[in-house]
Amino acid sequence: MARSSTRMKWVVSMFVPLILLHLVLAAPEEDGLVPNGDFEASPSNGFPSEATIIEGPSEVPSWKSNGTVELVESGQKQGGMILIVPQGRHAIRLGNDAEISQEITVEKGSIYSITFCAARTCAQLESINVSVPPASQTIDLQTLYNVQGWNPYAVAFNADEDNVRLVFKNPGMEDDPTCGPILDNIAIKKLFTPDKPKDNAVINGDFEEGPWMFKNTSMGVLLPTNLDEETSSMPGWIVESNRAIRYIDSDHYAVPQGKRAIELLSGKEGIISQMVETSPDKLYSLTFSLGHADDKCKEPLAVMAFAGDQAQNIHYTPNSNSTFQTANLNFTAKADRTRIAFYSVYYNTRSDDMSSLCGPVVDDVRVWFSMSNRLGGLGFVRLGLGVLGLVWLLL
Image (cartoon, rainbow, N blue to C red; front, side):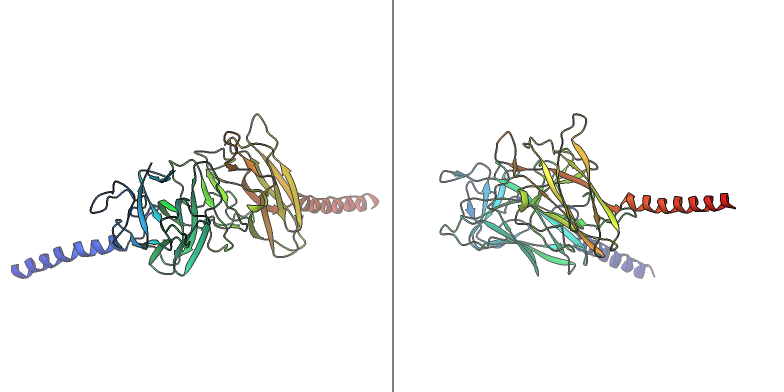
């Protein structure tokens, strides 16, 4: 009996660590950097003293590489050009048709957003493709949104399996095979679609749910074109234009309410929209906060707001007591779903460098039954009471 008990303890002691290891390995990625997402983990042979092409598929810890992939260091030069490393000391450069990939554990059926920092180098038409097969999106890096030369971007995907492959690829082909985008700070965040408020038809109208944001980065996160409302880094909303919009936080910008908002860039080339549920022939009011991000953006600032077949140009009027104001647009719904949308009227830049793109801030977007409907109802009640009173007097 003692021998059987000892054997049982030995079996348990062998299997418990294995079970715990399996649970750890199977756990979905936590919000934040993916393993070695900042490329600061040293390769087995140490960091190179200058740009070095990755020879093996696993030279970069936690990543697999294919093609001309270089591990670069901050301040490093290529000819007369200084290579930009967005954060920290190291980053990855993807040459012609090169890619890096990593297997990540997620929760099947959930929506995730990938935030990453990218900078262009010497290619004429530079872009980067981000995919979690079968989903794929190519992001144009040609537009310089600021003078720093790099930006955080975010894309979203729907997890079809518990284990997926995250791939970053340079789809370009240049005469110089080393030309290509620099990649750094790759993070993941599981997204949740907020419940629709009882008194508001807009989902995520306060923009509090969105992609991962780096606390030590004061540049916000760019949301590029995305026409799929079911898979969006900002649940409920789509970006239906050629240029990106900027997702901003209250740590680095003036935000009308809460911790998050959006900043509209590039005039008509930066449009954000949502289809909201409405009742045909009912009168509604679209209200929102319009403001200045306090990022030295040159005025005037204005938005074009759309609700169904109505459109209105609304200018931000500076106020010494506040950086934002409330705007509204009344409309009559024509169908059971109505499109609301916003874009910046002007192409604004910052006053300190005259180049970095900026624009008006939009927050706290609401669509509700117009008060005139309620007042109209009260009018009929008052009329009815008046008629009853007149009848009573005649009697």
